[in-house]
Length: 114
Length: 111
Image (tube, rainbow over all chains, first blue to last red):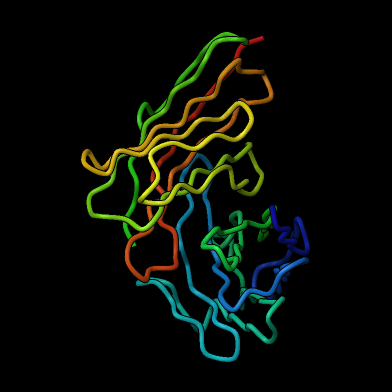
C-alpha cells in the first residue's frame, strides 16, 4: 500500500508553546488529507479535513484557531497546535486518500504538553 | 460519513485459531474498509471491499460483505501473536471522504 509519513513521531513541549506536525504522502499525491486525534484506549476522532489549496474543514467542537491546518502541496499537510496546554496531549494521526478510495494512515505523533 | 460498529469489543484466542470480527452499519455504502492498529501506532489499511463485492481475500484475511444485512466480517485464519491489535471497520457512503471510527475489536492472540 501507499506510504504516509509523519514527523515528528513524538514531541514534548512546554505549556503555551506551539507545535507543528507534518504529514507527507510519499509515493502518491493526495488532494485530501485528514487529521485525527486519539486519547488512550479510545477510538480515533476526526478533527478536520485538509484540502490542497483551500481552507480546512473542521469537525464540530474543534477550534480552528487552535489547530491550524495548512495543505500547501499535494503531498504535504501540516497541523500546528497553537498555545498548547496539557489537555492537548494526545496521539495525532493523519491520513491521505488515494485515488481508489483507500485511505492510508501515518504512524502518528505522540504529543505531550508539560 | 457513518460509523461502523465492531463486534465483539474484545476477542481472545489461541495462536493458530481463526478470529472472526463483525461490523454493522446503518445506511447504504459505496465501500467498506478494514484497518488494524497496533498499540500506540497508526492504522494499517487491510482491505477495501466495494458494495458490489461479496468476498475478498488478502493472505490470511478474508472479508465478506452482506449489503442486505448491512454487515461485514473480517476473518483472520491461523492467527499469530503478531495479529494482536485493534481492528476497525470504516463504511463509506455517497461522496463522503472522511472515515469515522467506532471502538473497534481488540484482538488478543495468545502464544
